[in-house]
Amino acid sequence: MTEPKHFLTLMDLSANEIHSLIKRAIELKSLRDQGRPHKTLEGKVLAMIFTKASTRTRVSFEAGMAQLGGSALFLSGQDTQLGRGEPIADTAKVISSMVDIVMIRTFSHADVESFAAHSRVPVINGLTDDHHPCQILADLQTYFETRGEISGRRVCWLGDGNNVCHSWMNAARRLDFELVVACPEGYDPDAKLLSDCGNHVRVERDPTEAVKGKDLLITDVWASMGQEHEQTARGTRLAPYQLNRRLLDKAAPDALYMHCLPAHRGEEISEELMDSPGTVIWQEAENRLHAQKALMEMLLASRSPLG
Image 1 (cartoon, rainbow, N blue to C red):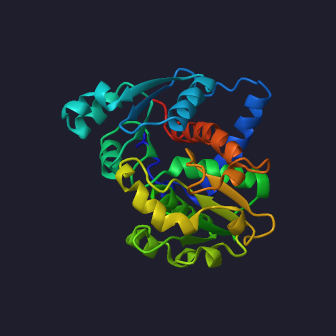
Image 2: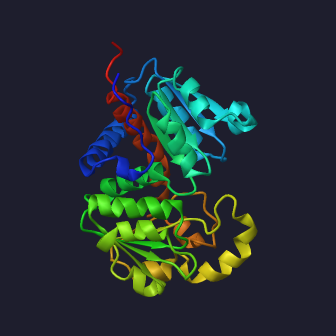
């Protein structure tokens, strides 16, 4: 069998692969809407390992695998020997000998890399402190569905330079569009990644200047899991970067805005925009299901049959 293809960051896919995946995600969405069976992964088993809590990630992967004809196993950190000190390499060798694909949602990105290095099957990063590539696949699908090709467009990220921001930065250099990260000092994205992105990504301190003429505005919660003790301080520093009508009106006339959820209404995004009938946020959330189904198909299709 060939070496497994993993999806740990968006850079694990080429631009052509991303386009093909999004096209297939849109097809799978149509099949589901029409009630047409699409059991392309019948008999396949997905292991889902969670050491970080989740709503959308668990539901989308578990429901997606069922709709594709396979099954999914939910494993919390307490359900595995990882929680009792077993080396990641040992766990990876055992679990990957019994299932067809693994999704991990955890804190350290190095842990996911270590698991993938010792896995016989594809490994998907369901979220780490550094990257959230599955979310960006859904976001890109949403943009393609509503506005078409994103290459050459202008995008603005508002708020903390976090894991979702990092994955959007990778998307900018992979798909050739401009990303402006609007954040105060001390909340910048990773410096090395920023350097690697070259002219595709820049940081702007003034949120009003950052959003001017942009085709897409994106935000996320200001305090991620593990940062709750910083909530008040972060709220004070990031308040000018709230995604609201005033900033949206400075963007392009037909600009979209996104939030990966869960949202703190009235903090990083205004109540008005969350409840606007024109928002694509709920479409974006649903697309986690379809994009991840396409991703699992793609990764498993890269495996040759057992000899």
